[in-house]
Amino acid sequence: MKNSKISGMGFHVPEHIVTNADLEEMMNTSDEWIRSRSGIEERRWISEGEGGSDLSLIASEKAMEMAGVTSNDIDMVIVGTASSDYYFPGIGAQLQDMLSLRTIGAFDIRVGCSAFIYGLSIADQFIKTGHCETVLLVGVDVLSPALEKNPEGRDVGVLFGDGAGAVIIQPGEEGSGILSTHLHSEGKYLKDLWVELPSFRIEGRGFDEERIKAKRHRLRMNGREVFKHAVTRFPEVIKEALDANNLTMDDIAQVIPHQANFRITEAVAKRLNVDMDRIYSNIHRYGNTTAATIPIAMCEAYEEGKFKADDHIILAAFGSGFTWASAAIKWI
Ligand SMILES: CC(C)(COP(=O)(O)OP(=O)(O)OC[C@H]1O[C@@H](n2cnc3c(N)ncnc32)[C@H](O)[C@@H]1OP(=O)(O)O)[C@@H](O)C(=O)NCCC(=O)NCCS
Image (cartoon, rainbow, N blue to C red):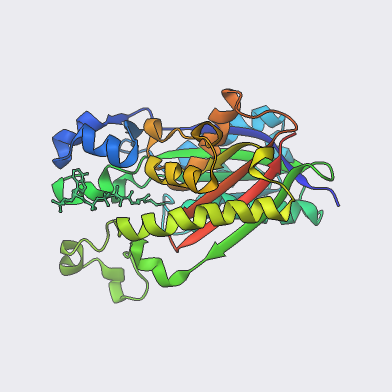
């Protein structure tokens, strides 16, 4: 059976740069605290009037250009995001219109930071079964409007940035391209990283003064619990991808992990017993852009020559749900 392959990729981040010094003014934090706990130096936040669909459009156009495909070629759109412009419909349908695509299937998936790899897995199945020839997959998140930009929100507020990354997925050859994908979840931890409101469990969806005052519409995270699980699940799911393809870490040119936190990435490298130069990191520039970190990192790692044709790479993610996932790719 033919595997699918990534034939084009691109990313876009907002113009507005927010440095750690900017956050010192807002949040009673310090550049030293943010760098030492997360590795982040700056991030991009959207400006008034800008949304995830706008970033997705530019990232998608770049990916389409690299793959040499036009709007007419695309026969499915998958968007991984937890921060669509509207509660529903998602960004997928917006992109169908913005890119003037045919009336093809277009939908969003909502699994936080794991969404790009979940989307890759879905696209892979549609290509392998012959149902699709050209899938546009976007990972995009703009969580900055859900952050509390004052001292009370500093534990979460310093970590997240906004951005979008897109890939085009098409049929490749047997034995190369996307070799395998591995998806997991453990929903009992959902309240350790979540945005509760607006909720359809509540009449009026929870927009009352009391709930807003209790900040139940903000991004809330149990940082220590997330850290503890992430440093276990990342190595586990990377090993799963290696084992499924009879590979070892020596065969891997680059692991491209979700950029949650530089300290998590360092802990993963240690557990895998590999040097940090084999595990890509650009979190210092963008912070945690949720579903967008992996496609953005993949673009930059490729541009920097960290992997090339015939190299093996591993993508790995961990995030809200909890969910975690990996993909093994032989780049072509
Ligand atoms: C969030 C995280 C960086 C916090 O680091 P930590 O070492 O666990 O820090 P703690 O939460 O124990 O807080 C330590 C102190 O720093 C303070 N603090 C928290 N945020 C701060 C900030 N932005 N600036 C300055 N001080 C801060 C706390 O108030 C606490 O002070 P105290 O000791 O006086 O009570 C860490 O838990 C983490 O990386 N978690 C994973 C987060 C993640 O990756 N999320 C995305 C997953 S997809």
